[in-house]
Image (cartoon, rainbow, N blue to C red; front, side, top):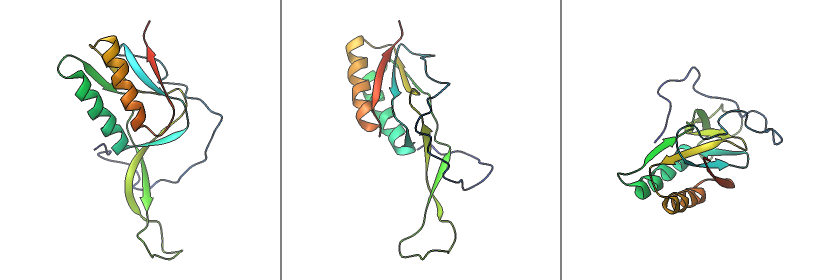
Length: 137
C-alpha cells in the first residue's frame, strides 16, 4: 500500500476541519479522458486508494492507462486498547490523504466510454465521499 518513504516528522497534528473550502489545484483532468472527482471533505486512506486502483486495473486490462492523482502523506496515530489518558501520543497506524471538494482522484484513458463509466462508478463505491465522474471535452 501507499506510505511515504521518508517524512520530516513521524507524527502530525489533526488540524482544523475547514468545511467551506474547495480545492484550488488538481480540479481538472490533466492526463486521461475520464476521471473521478471527490465532492466532500474526507480522509482517503491508503487502503481505499489501493482498492480503487485494483478495480480500475480489472476494467482496463492491457488496453487502458491509469493515473492516481493523490498520495497519502498524513500519518494517523492510534493508541493501543486499555491505555490511559496522559501516556503520550500513539504510534502511527496508517496514512491518509486529506481531500477537499473538487479534487480529481483517478484518471483513466484508452478504454471505451461505457467501460470507463462502469469502472469509475465502481471506484466511487470504494471512496468515503460523494463522487462525480468527469470527462474531457
